Image (cartoon, rainbow, N blue to C red; front, side, top):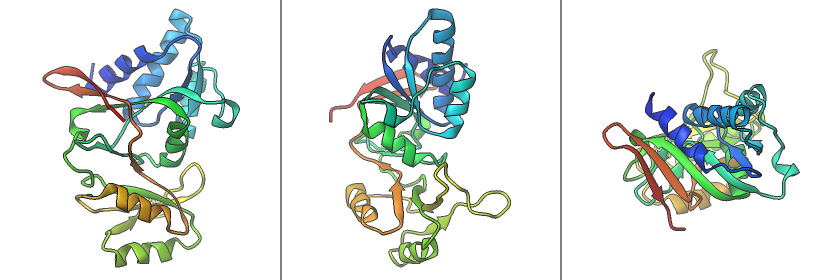
Length: 226
């Protein structure tokens, strides 16, 4: 069993009967969704899922997980999702799978957020992983130019055919290749003010628990004060 599978299965233990559960997106969250599907089928677990992407919605539907949209629930009890990077002070970058907008919406309306990662995602400072910024197509070239002027080293994310990748909301992704983000709060505030930016992948002060798969120590669970 690989580390992603280990932490995915471990995280599903926090899901209890009657919960509304935010179902994350990505290669690690995949195993969590699979385990919840297994528990529904084999243990009679009774939950409602709220998905963070069309891909997760498709997976959950095949597994028979009952689903509602974020607008059909009053709040989400717990959201379990992966992360692309987690800094020493437990800030995160997400959006490598282009699902950052829905992921942030679901996390915002969640009582508890758990991130599940392998040890390689734990870093001192954010930034080695390019920061995804979701932008509307109209005006995206102007934003690229503006980001270049700010020395943020932006690159429009392209598919294999050379066309811009489209998010589930039919937007573009501009990845900022910054290497180190020393002031994530200041950068997040600046990005929030740029017209045409829909959302960015800085998830700040949003996580309550991190479950880490370590090749030496196995599973590590960290409770985050916020």
